[in-house]
Image (tube, rainbow, N blue to C red; front, side, top):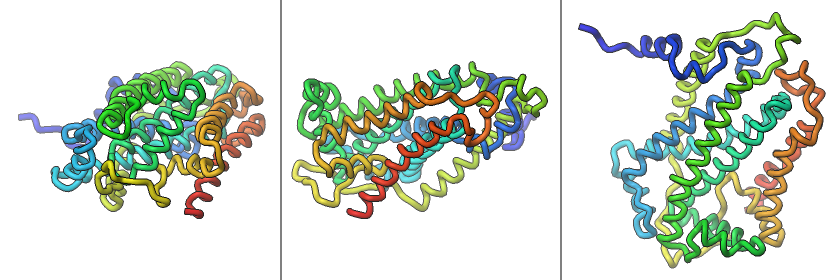
Length: 358
């Protein structure tokens, strides 16, 4: 009688026997560029967190009700009544927050190691577009709570869309249904979160991974410049990635146990905004800028300008020298490092200012 494979055997089969996951990776990659101190594990961790979000989000859909009357109550049912529902919800919440942090780290790593040579510039744009979609998905998921904690975010997002000249009203109708906060608006956010944004994000993610694979994996110096460098095969790479996923899941579970996801009383038509209401953490910098005046300029135009400046870094600033690719802080792309550093500093500074002033 055959016995079920142990965890060790399953782990060995997953990592060392050829399978679909191995063929997502190039046959070999340079050992130096495969180390954690170079990659920070950001790309693989982001991919893993997306899988966690899909699984936990699918489980939550069995109980979530996209209705203005029932949405917040269904969140409470998931949290307090469904067996281990609290853990599933917490994992989903923290996976979404960690995904944004890891994506930012991945962007910083790409720019600060010069990993956007001419053949990889388009993939840089794909990754940046994917990051923008992840922010929108996190925001739409935040609104789906439909409790008093999301009042400011819901009101501000609707008003910012309306502030866009010429197309504001039409765009508001398209995105939110154009009605006052209620079931119609909630259903629109639900549809965008589950179907629209998720579909676009999955397309860009698959495209992004395909481009990485087609470009030979992680950026590194050409072989003719370093032909004697040690290389590791795809089996060893998958083994390291699986270990990183196990570690990431352990951290995610621990954080989810000790730090529950936010929950608040259900939002009603009588709920009103207060001075203490705020945006989710990743948009606090926008909320701070909105204090300065014109909502369109500070809440829509300025963020789009910053996103555009980040997008054109590989196209307008000096390309990193081929011999310096594959290590941190190459001198040949110092301007790109400074440019992204200023943008990141601006986000962090405004967030800190808002937190200190609130």
